[in-house]
Length: 319
Image 1 (cartoon, one colour):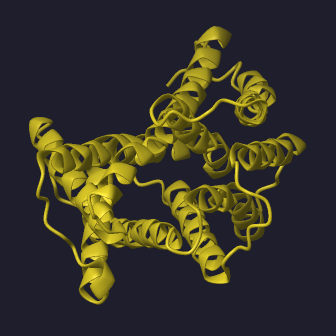
Image 2 (cartoon, rainbow, N blue to C red; image 1 turned 180 degrees about the vertical axis):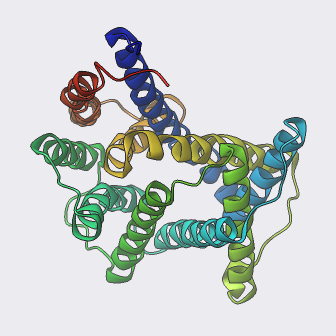
């Protein structure tokens, strides 16, 4: 029987991993652009539920067009419907609790606390799925959290709101659960189709939430600029971010994807510096450096496993 050349096996495995990390990085950077639209829309009088609802519903509309162009069927099985509905509900809960926390604390502090989700992902995978966390994974999580902490530049003596902290931790936990479910279910589906249904369910959940919360009623879009920013939010930090996130998780796993997500706040900081005229300090540079180091470490973590897989497949016969 013919044998698979070492280079062929190596290239195949490396390509899968590289695709996963590229998708994870793309998702994180895209999600980090949220402040570009959200801050403007808040100034226009939009409440959190309105921003989230329009962000999701515009994403659904754009994805529907993409699927029609691809001539992709919208049919799904009962099992897929159950899983996608769960993911949509969980994702909407994560978004609503995070945006609601902004009413109780500074968004910078909230974003810092939010990044506890890689730890939660690692704990969930270890406790429920017996996944062992290597020294590199633990070190990467520690470096990323330290880096994120340095990215926040708050005033000293700030007393955190208990309600605000609980809301952010709930947002972090639900996002961690979302990542784990995507990883464990392994649904074989067009990424755009998967994101379409998740966003559709999420939009419905947010709309239902607004009906029972007068302070978060969905308001009308009244200006072209607001429409443009909402379309931006629907495309970049939603469609691009969620689609690439759903691609990354099956290829590299839950914990590495969560750690790579540290690039989200880094992107937000960069946007703050270049768009909102923020200042670039040594503290920010060190924070960004630590986050990038954590991403590099978690990316290189798979090299020993790759060598082992290549060795095991060295004499694998071709089918």
